[in-house]
Length: 74
Ligand SMILES: [Zn+2]
Image (cartoon, rainbow, N blue to C red; front, top):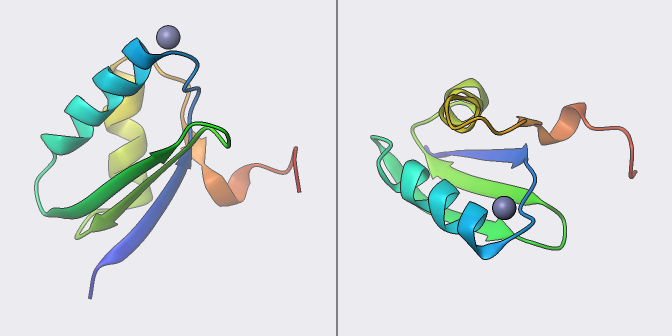
């Protein structure tokens, strides 16, 4: 069964979004991916973990955290 990974990362401009999507697309074993620019949220499904998605984003210099760890706007 596919995991649903939700990560919070700044999506402030088209350039960032494009780069993030490109990096995620390259990940192995993903099924779908999507971004919500209003929530600054990246959603990836597939045989991946939150840690793997965060690692990819952090490698790009993005400050990514697990969605459930974010308590600021609940
Ligand atoms: Zn940007």
